[in-house]
Structure formats: C-alpha cells, structure tokens
Image (cartoon, rainbow, N blue to C red; front, side, top):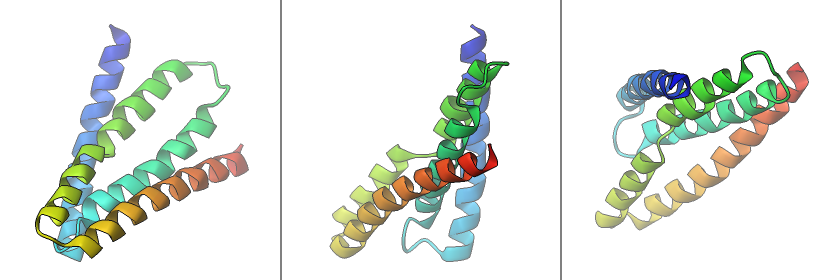
Length: 125
C-alpha cells in the first residue's frame, strides 16, 4: 500500500508541475506548435536519465525514492499521451511538415536528453 501512495503523491506532483510548465511555455512561445509538451518530454527524459543513474545501486530508501520520482513524479510530468494527441491534431489539420518535425525532434531529443542526464549523473557520482 505504501508503494501506491508514494507513486500517487509523486504522480500528482508531476502532473501539477507539467500543467504549470506547459502553461508557461505556451504563454512564452505561443500555441502554433506543441512547445509545452515538447519541452516537458525533453526535460523529463533528461531528468529520468539523471535520476536512474543517481539512484542506481543505492539502498537506503531508494526503492521508494525511485518509485516516487521515476514512476510517480516523472511519469506524471512527461506526457506521451499528450504527444500523441498533439501529433494527431497536426496531422488532422494537414500540417504534415510540422507533424514530422515534431515526431522526429521529440523522439531524437528525448533520447539525447536521457543520455545527457545519465552522463551528467555519472559525472556527479
């Protein structure tokens, strides 16, 4: 039961952070392109890479910390379902080029961001 509570609290916090971050990005960049979802997914990928390495091999409470941060907070923060909906919107409105750029950039940059997070964590440990 404690594991579900940790994941739930982390997920709620991650979702609230995503909403706040997304709203600010849209206010800054506009809504012509799904900048908020894009930025959240890249940042979340970096943070999950960083967290995975920093918690690797740790034992004191790391199980709950890993669940709370990686499954809960970062799972609630990143938003693949929103990515899918944004992509479909671009495709349905026949914005083919923007859709392809969004898909390609999201996948590539999220993988690069996760790798950068892992590299940063290795430098820290």
